[in-house]
Image (cartoon, rainbow, N blue to C red):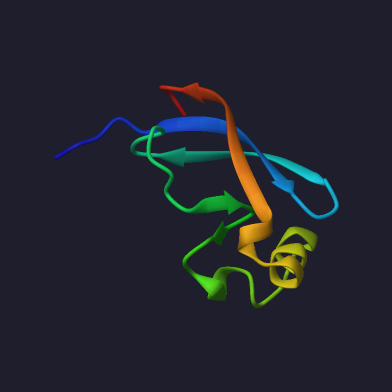
Amino acid sequence: LSFTPYGYIYKTTNLVNKKIYIGVHKTENPEIFDGYLGDGVLVNKPSSYKIRLTPFQCAIDKYGVKKFIRKTIKVFNTL
């Protein structure tokens, strides 16, 4: 089976300090949340942020994934 990859621009907001992170991600279905918050962080995969290589990963580890929300800004049907 082949699938059409979708790309989207997202905004992830830290609910504690209101800092925002803007990025792009690709997915098979932009209508279904795939757990991606940004910068390689997956909500159900602590190893994706416990190593703390970037400021965003540090923030996720410090505040916890439940203190962040991701909003899709724009979906593209091409990469």
